Length: 501
Image 1 (cartoon, one colour):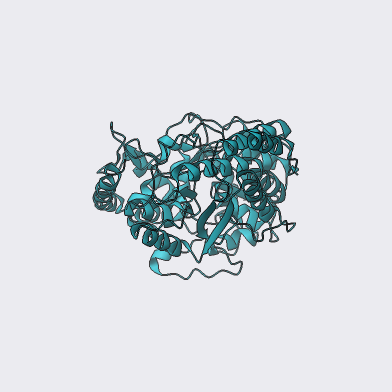
Image 2 (image 1 turned 90 degrees about the vertical axis):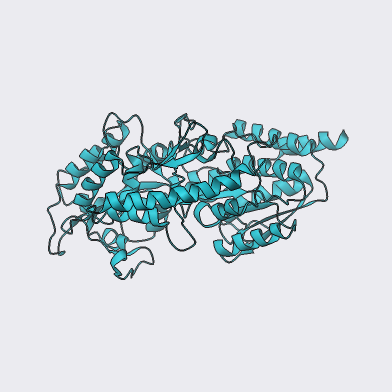
C-alpha cells in the first residue's frame, strides 16, 4: 500500500511541462466517420489535462507488478527513440526521453530499445524471433506498409482490442481504430501520438506565397477563407490555379508543382476498400464510376505538361533532385509553381529552404461534402504492434497504455504544437489549417492487401496512381485485373485472422 501511495504522489507532483510555442487549438478531435482516424492532434494538454494523465499513469503503475522487469521495444532508428538517455536540448529527442524516463521511474522497469537498420530488418527480426519461440521483444514500432502488414501476414502479433488495459476510447489512441483497421472485428494495429509519424504522415496542400504574389487575383485571405468556410473544393482549386497561365515551354510558372492524385482520391471521400456484413474487407470487382470520373479529371490536370511538370517514374525517368527530396518538389522550392501536394512532414522539411508557403487541406470533392479528409501516407504511417511471445501480455499492455498516455503529454506537445504548428509555419492562418487537416485523417487498408513491399507500392495502388495521374485509358482493365489479385490476397490474410483468438 505504501508503494502505491508513493507512486501516485510522485506522478501528481511531477512537474516538467513542455511549454507550447503555438498556443492551443479548440477543435474536438473525436469523429464518428467510418474509415477515418482522429489521433487527437488538435488540442494541447494544459496543466489540468497533464495532471489527469499523470494520475492515470500512476494508477496503472500502482496496480501492476512491474518492478525489476525489462521492457524492450524494437524498430528502425527514428524519432520514436531518444538519442541519449538524458536531456539534449533537442525538442524531439527530449520529448521521447521524458516519456521513457517517466516509465522507468513509475514502473520500476528498464527500457531497452533495439535499433534496426530499416523496416525490412525490423520485420525479419520480429518474425524470426517469434516463430522460434523467443520472447525478446515486447513492442514493435514500424510503418504500416513496410512492417506491420508483414507481421500480420506472418501471424506473429497479438490481437489488441481484447486486452482490457489498452483503453481504445482514450484520446491518445486514434478514435476510429476499430472501424479503420479492424478485420472481421479483430484489431492488430495501434496508432496515436505514441508514434511520432502520426504528426508527419498526413497529406496537405501548400501554396507558394512568392508565386501567388505575382498574380493579383490570388490572395492568402481568399485561400484561407475558402478552407475555413468548408468551401475549398476541386472546383475552387482549379479556378484559383487558372489565374496562372499555361506553361507549355516550361520557362514560366506552373500551376501545380507535383503529381499526387491519390491524395485527391481520398480527400474527395472515396475509399478503395469496402467491408462486408461480417466486417471482412473486400474490393469492388469493376472500376467504380466515381473513381473513373475523378481519374479523368485528375489526368486532365496532372497529365497536362502545360499545367504540371511531372517525372513519369513508370517510364523510367530519373528521380534526381537537388533538394534531397522528390524531384516533384523542385519547381515549388524554386518558386516556379503555385500549388504543391505534400505531407505535413514535407512542410517541416521544406521550411529549411528559401521558399515561403502557406498550408491548406486537400480539397473536398464538392461543397456538399461534410468534412475534409487527409490521407495518411502508407510508408509514413507509423503503428505499433505487440508480438505474440511478449514475456507478459498484461505488463506489456499496461506499459504500452502508459507510454501512449505520456505521449499525449510530451510527444504531441513537441511535435504538433512546437514543431508543426510552430517551426513549420509562416503565418498564423496555417496553424488553423493544420487543425482542420488533423481533424480527420483517412487511411485505406488497400495498401496492405495490394501486395506492397519494402521498396514499392503494391501493384493495385501503383495502377490507381498511374491511371489517375498520367493516362486513364486502360484504367478499367487494369483495375479489374488488380482487383482480382488483391481479393486473393485478402482471402489469404483472412485465413490468418480467422486463426487468431
